[in-house]
Image (cartoon, rainbow, N blue to C red):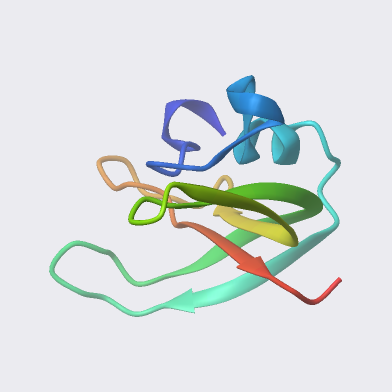
Amino acid sequence: MGRHDAVPRTRTIDGGKRNVLDVLRAVPHQRTIELRVQQSRKRQARSAKLVVTAAPVALILRDHHTGTARTRRLTAVWAREHGTCPPGEEPLSWLLYTTTN
């Protein structure tokens, strides 16, 4: 996956010791999917191979207006391109949070 496998500004967990991607990197890939990428200014048309990993995480959600914080259990899902990104392009990478297991 290399140097491009980081999603900017991921949330920290475990009191700031790890971030969500640390958790997802430690979990085996659960699925591989193919996605048709249309050509654009920044991307070549291709059939992209995405590896998908999901894991439960407990995020600390802070309200900066009130100074309060609460923990919310969610499932983090990370889909990222593997082995099909043309040279000079950033691989596809999406991180989402869901309440669905």
